[in-house]
Length: 114
Length: 115
Image 1 (cartoon, each protein chain N blue to C red):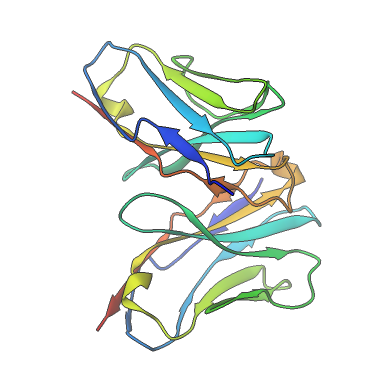
Image 2: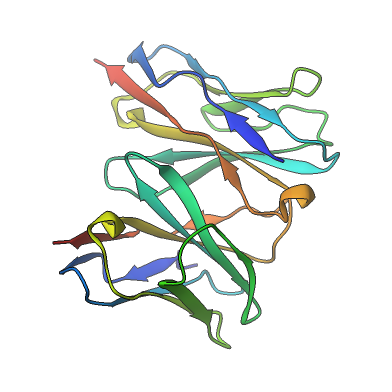
């Protein structure tokens, strides 16, 4: 069974631009979560989608948005990029939300904002 | 509120020795799951082991075992016979209904295995 895939793996953008990251979950998984990881802040939850609906959202500005498609694939978008958005963006999937459900992570997208 | 505490920012261990990485958690939920992940320098978070709050036996997965002490709210990861490839960041996480099942992660422990 294929794991979680994320594209692109690396991105370099300049301030003010926007970026779209893509995540394909493990087949059968309907819950997709996004995280931002930086050395200073650690792993921070961005949002979670389940059955095409945003189920939870972390404490991030509105510049960060996402969506999920009917095939469970998900995208996240960051508009008006800032230097502080440079980070590793991780996507994780599980069958459904639940305390017994293991999230499996993708390889991440490394975003550098210049 | 859910909270995970990993008090060891860095750990060193000799190859082939065992090492314990500490994790304590706080939740008012009765049903919760505890997870450990490994993150090598490549960045991918690799799932290692899961322990449910109602599981009476400690979880084991190959060289990984989870020392679950519910009364003390601790879920320490034990790696037996350390290998050089075990050098990585290790994160403890919890999912519970009180947190809407959003995983709460600790700050991580950096493990370095010496030859």
